[in-house]
Length: 464
Image (cartoon, rainbow, N blue to C red):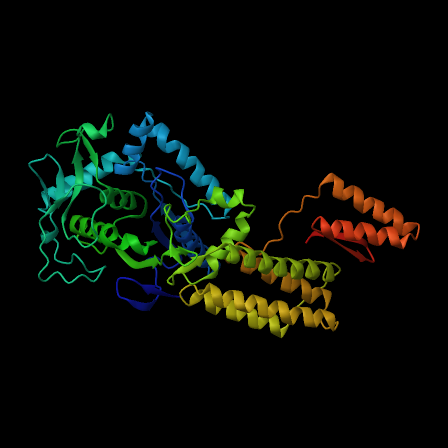
């Protein structure tokens, strides 16, 4: 398996620290609002990464943090007049509901920042003792960028001529600013009742220290993979490396994977432009999680992805083609009890899928192999060249592919009572050889979005 390592800017063969186990940290949401589809582009990439590692036989230990204390969450809780915990709990709950709607596999750990303050204080104390951090005259603790000679290696910054030493207390700041960043922020009135005791007085952690402290606790001082959106690379991930490696003297992460931005209708997503969407916005427009998932995973994670309603409609068509083939395949292979083998066209797809996933998560190549297989499989069934037993093997291959993609399962079909009644009426019309009425009911069902197909085993109904 090969990944494009952001740190080296090269495609590298993946070799985990432990032979069969992969430890992975993924930057999770700041729970100050509902996550938007740009956020889920990153979470979908990380889900495909996790599933691909499992598909290739690795055990994965994944940590995704929840940032529930920072400038945004504090400002939101104060503006709404509720406690920080009550404010963030609403968006934590919504986040997990959204993950389930998109079929994203759960991580092993979802540590919240507010539950790990002692670990952060301990890490800050270590950095002060080593001379990498200092308590300033404003009673904040800052990381001293010039104390870490490798600062800028991830983002490939040219430090020559850059002036470091300016202090930045806010959690997010100008990405062109190389500055000493806050590890601990002294309390002031703008923080309201949000503070913890520390050796430097009451206050709260800075955003960057949270991820290092929590990754240490759950994954150790060195681990395999760290992921996030490309916007996290600097300063957040750069700062993570600096404070982690300064504290331990060890390499923090072996492989850094970053996904590109999501655009909406070929524009930057913005509320002012009117192209800012949460999952709930898309659900309200009649789209389903499976269709949204398909759009988010279909492009390569390192390429900018354009999200549009046309893409969602195209996803619905593509999924319909997959569903039609799987339904046909299941009906065709229903009597296949003996042991089957994969036809050559399915074997080709199996090899191509494996190669695509192993090539830096090339999902587009995997989907191309699947649609080639559907084309060849339909030809084979039309010609009677596929045995029922071999059809079962092809169906099992789909199940394997779905462990990675999560969109190939046939959706559960709930048939409304009114539709069921029309199907019964149509059967009665056919039994009495009233073909005109039978055809009329079939056309009525089609107008209502249902397709009925007559088979030797009776009428088969599916959503069109």
